[in-house]
Image (cartoon, rainbow, N blue to C red; front, side, top):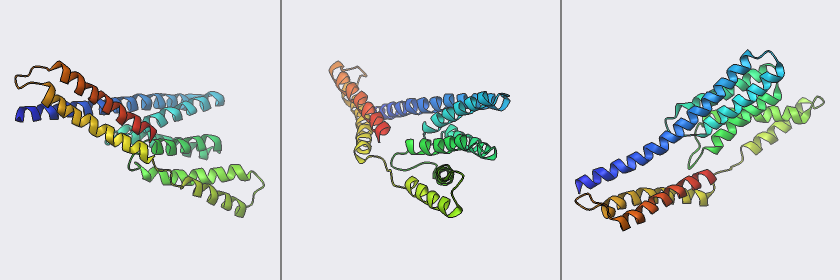
Length: 224
């Protein structure tokens, strides 16, 4: 019994490690793409090429930040990079680029939330900048201070509206996770004999349940 519990724990730990490793490696690859594009932008002499490289950097950093997992340092580094690009764009009065960067921060955070929202310390400031820049775009050159303030208040209210994850998809993700984990334990208890021989019929059944649970979990997370 003790041996089976140890094996079951190792199987679950191995599966979790595979998923976590996939998330971190994907985040790292996207971060490196964004970093390389940012370096090209800094060395570019042609404004058009510089803007194209900055847009590519923003896309890379946004993708990296969306691969959220607890302890994944590439997420916070990507969010900081996006904020850095946004501030630089504001300094050069490039409102379009600044909005793209701030909106990417918002999309990355909201796109990676589950039953809680990670990196809320980045979300609030990003919403504030988006609201202010959107108000300036809406008001143009003729709007007065009071009108711009009304626009900014309206945009900020829209950005702060609750857009919590879908309850149904969240429940599906939770069910998928528990199906995956419980099936892994049942695989060990029912598909493996005390002499460590595989029972083919049980192995197919519980192996299929493991796969089904994993697919449900990933689908629920992606749609929630």
